[in-house]
Length: 248
Picture 1: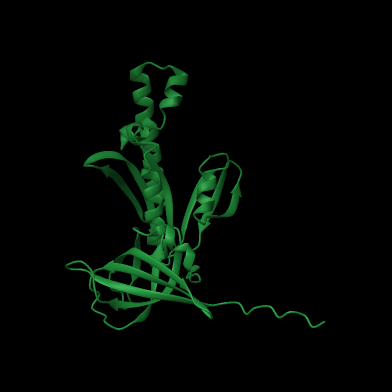
Picture 2: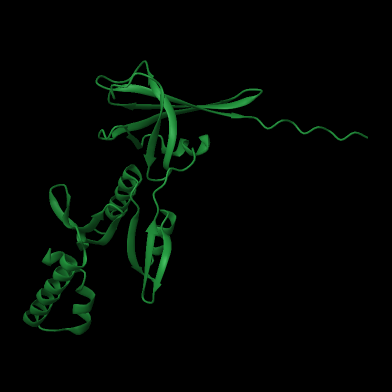
């Protein structure tokens, strides 16, 4: 944890040019101050190490409460930066938030380039605190996305929220098949995933980092790899009636 913290102050060290011993003592002091502050300022802090291929890549600090998951800090060691690890961590938190129905909050410097990415993930400005902005991403069940929005996410996983407090399942979208009739437009979505033990078609809550949290009517169908089942959902939209020509 100390080494990760020190890596975030490297530019400052280069600027000051202090002797190694003086800088090491300063960093240890600052790390101790920060860690004590986080322990006392948050009710349920989690100090997590991020591992990649078994190696320590960074840290993830969270404060989970019934009303909000607070993202306190993400920091990566220099060798692991710009590899998409931070994005994966954020998207995982978004899926967790939408699955549990608990919003995410965070502070970000107003001039930080990541601000735009937070906004694209659905974070909204809640308070302007001068240097820092407090942003919050609400978690709510949204409408069913348009059928065409699913096609770019073939091969990605959706979290399926099961009732009665059962652990969520993971479904992979494997095929999107649209077709158009005279009166309606139909799009079939095929997923693969574990046997949920619920043979009947039903409306479930699905969560995806880019499509959000939405209801979808689906059920098991024949096919699927060994140990998995196939699930199908059919989205139907009525065609707009043709405009009548004005009488002349």
